[in-house]
Image 1 (cartoon, helix red, strand yellow):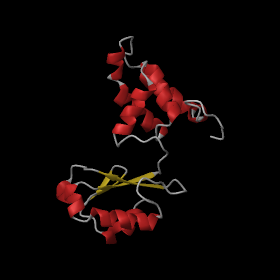
Image 2 (cartoon, helix red, strand yellow; image 1 turned 45 degrees about the vertical axis):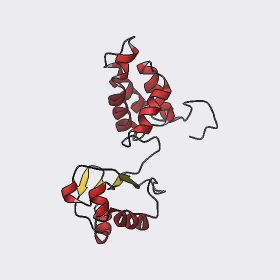
Image 3 (cartoon, helix red, strand yellow; image 1 turned 180 degrees about the horizontal axis):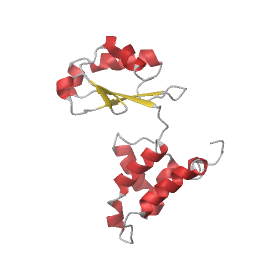
Image 4 (cartoon, helix red, strand yellow; image 1 turned 180 degrees about the vertical axis):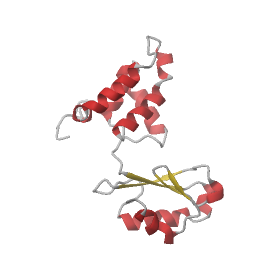
Length: 174
């Protein structure tokens, strides 16, 4: 931040968070990384989970750091991040609100709930509020179809949600 650099991995996140970098480095160094690139790829997803847990998201510098530690190409790391909806390369809010948009939830009105959350928060799906308090997203299926429609706030699941419950859900976010 604050840098005007167009080079790969120069976003300043690692430098701004040296303790987080040390934690991630210690984690990856504890893995049996070797010269077998195919074997190293087997540690990619768990390393990205740890990195996102530590930094909150996966900026380019963190992606490059993981790639270098695993001795794989940055494009492979980005391919995994862009494929799995769990991973994000942009900062997210303290409260990650996800509305299930899978078939059962969709049929039972999840889009109305998503619209109501969007209205209350003043952001669209995929965005974060300016104060970094809330992020709003959609998920394909959370595996709780009997509770449709479902809203998740971080790890808390709300079932049988109606648009009238949106304010109550937001109030639960201290």
